[in-house]
Image (tube, rainbow, N blue to C red; front, side, top):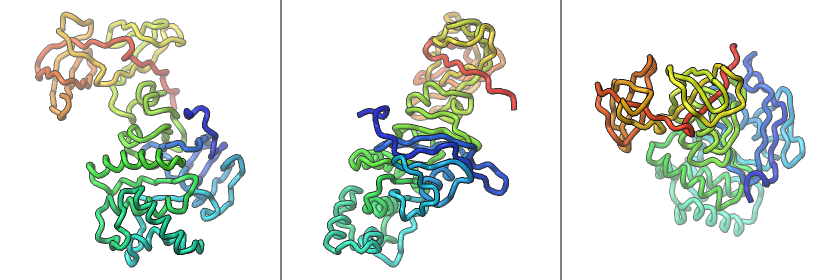
Length: 352
């Protein structure tokens, strides 16, 4: 079953939230499908954590409706919602061992001890920490503590798991390992994950759907491939990965002018001679000899990044970022070859 045919589980309808006269959310509309891994992505202050807290019941919207399986849940307290939350700060109980931490919610619900034992053992196996029941939580690594926090949330069998930057405190290697593990976990469990991050790599790695936010508004919703390859505006293009964004003019369908030259492209539906923004990813620019390209420039800098070189090339007053496995050293004159499929055209943002 693909995402398009999955049931809508959560829906936010014209939801707004204001803090001290600052609009945290501006009448956003969003739906989340059952069993989906959806990521709210954006810089600090964009409204992503506010959105998560509204879904979890930790905040109430000033206006608009929040629906769960078609029923309005405005005013329903967190403990009555079929969701659990994992925060960046693990909030584990230091005086309890691993088993006691995970079992805490089940004991509050007065679940039978035998059932609690079975559930805790099963969930520890799921997060690859079987046999850790008696360990003190303070003796565990950051990654292990995060798995315990996730296990404690999952053992209550929520329909939705909300994760607020849960990997932010981990080092890079552990963060990358946990990204893969979280995605695998979500697929095995078949429950809905709503994930908050400012890290575009995390979003691209794990998500079925990415919601890019800025200043309390949704900029774009789509799959990781759609968001990366077809950004809706300059903010999305710049925030998701690295981009060269240059002003241009759409002369007609399939023909754009930028950097004092005309280029064939695959875009259509713009007005003739319409000013546009042109987006070209650094890895999509091919280095050729200067005489083989209408676009030439001089390499100003080159840095080895491990899997590729990153070069800055000055051409027609614009500094192009190019990523290539082939090195063109500083000072060399080169040609820049750009295929029609690698040119993405965006309408200019309206003046503020």
